[in-house]
Length: 277
Image (cartoon, rainbow, N blue to C red; front, side):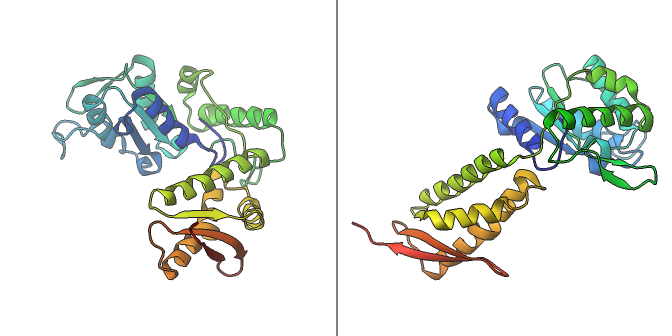
């Protein structure tokens, strides 16, 4: 899964886990930025005989042995040390990995997912990092450029064309969060937040003018995708609403309406208590 940040790659992996296995514990995630050292592969498969920690085993092999029906997510694969690619080659090719203790661990029941931001940026002739794709470009162009950069990275930078060949056509390129999709994300996040309050016994509604202003604040910058929308929603709604409810000593059974937003250094809400019929 490749594409810009904040477009739902990791979230989709969690959803697939729930769909396939119905169990959150079947989701195993490895942040590949933690595996940038040359000998980081020992964390995955375990130290070889004679080394400290030999009897402990590896994080990956232990997890699959205990829970073979799992979704294994390797997040931001481009940050891993190239030496780890040989381990991934074994998993994808044979579905088997030998741990440091010599045990054979089978991945035949696991779903392997790699995520990557490769292709969003590239190096120009001066070695500067520049945008390879832009939000204003059509998705077909984004998809083409991202796949081309992924191919270049595996073949020329990592020198692992065989790994790319085994992944084959199973590369899903995610589009940027476009305005129409951003609207849906905003509406769903806002609704979920207000629904969460009802579980606490509080009813909070937002009038149309306040909702329009909140939408403008949250969707003004889509460069960080859905994660950015959530951050803006926390800054302009969740945090100021929490302060307002605390100041008003809100109790279960109370109803409130947000009638306005005062945006500045920190957003403040105009919150009115609704009288019960």
